[in-house]
Length: 192
Image (tube, rainbow, N blue to C red):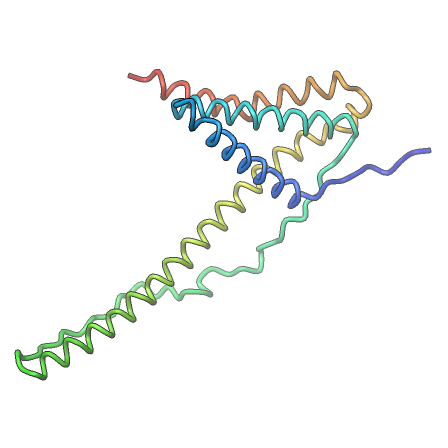
């Protein structure tokens, strides 16, 4: 009797991985307060914890024959320029001359109120751009992370039930996925 292959959803794996990264960072920070470790030592410790969790997760998934299903939302209906029009021109701002009397004082107060409202609106737009940027960065990370794990779990059909083959694949992919980060940090540490 052949059992159906188990599939994990990409979104749930990504959310769990963000939680693991957050908990790891918090753990390293809280344990590092009393030991005065350097930033690179904390970074290496974080990568060690993340690498161990990644290795165990991939080993278990490969051993059990788990696949990864793509449930990432499609953004093909998004059209460039629909949210903010791209006219390419900046409107001319008027210059306002006010005297030094009561009229100038009233005009200054009114301009102050208008500029406060404009700055408030610009800050709201800046916040929207910030959150859109965060969303795009998370979407890129999700895609890279999903593609990397999908590539690993494509081997699960051949490693299902073989613990040593699962561990060997997991170890090699863990070294591959985290080794370049360790290499970059090491090179920046020894660079004069």
